[in-house]
Image 1 (spheres, rainbow, N blue to C red):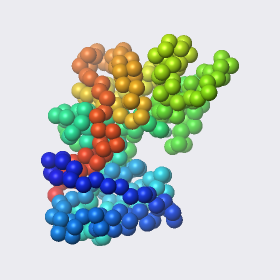
Image 2: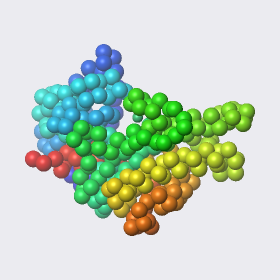
Image 3: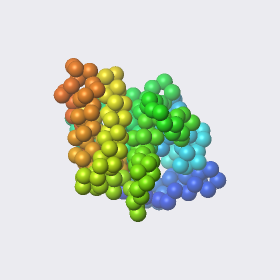
Image 4: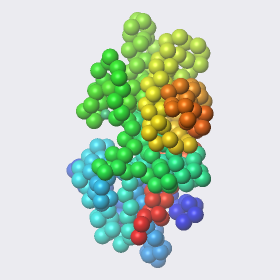
Length: 291
Ligand code: ZN
């Protein structure tokens, strides 16, 4: 990508997770070397990487990336040694937040809350144009906000009733399954788009499940808004494909729970860049790395 954010070349390679993913950094480096001509590679100013896991506070190590089978992977050092180019690491949700600020739904804004509603719930908080990483690289980990509930849903982090056990695609499907079971009803297929579709067709149970989903998510996001008071909330991830059917009631719920001073002074927008948000944000972070 050039410094204005125009993608010059885009490609992908398979992810080799054998032997605890130890070949991944080397395969990234050799793919870069074979794809970009040596002369061009010399002029590359930096490499930004959005990683699916937390980064150590010094920005050098991927603490853990469950999907890649990594623990304590010194990714920055390995790639800098292999390629001789400065590497900037950041968490993928934080990267997506910066990407949406630079080239997406929050263009021109310096303060935003980015939320991904996918398999899990991720988040990135940008204040004054900078991502909030926190003292333990857990800033913006909004998926693990505790939800008060009589249920006992086990979260991947080891906690109970974390926000993502309710407000993710998996959480939504579990809620729908439980509701159907109670009514001794069953659907041939159950996916988030089907739930939204049924609700749009006035299916009472689907509407109730979505109302509960929106209430839980709206409460959590209102709590964050009361803490950071930003002007825009950007919603990405697979569930954001529901568009206004999700975003309108979500904004209404948030309006109900936020501090009066904030009420009607923020917007909830659908993310624009999809999977590319992280690419833009990683480059943005690399360009803005303090030298
Ligand atoms: Zn959790």
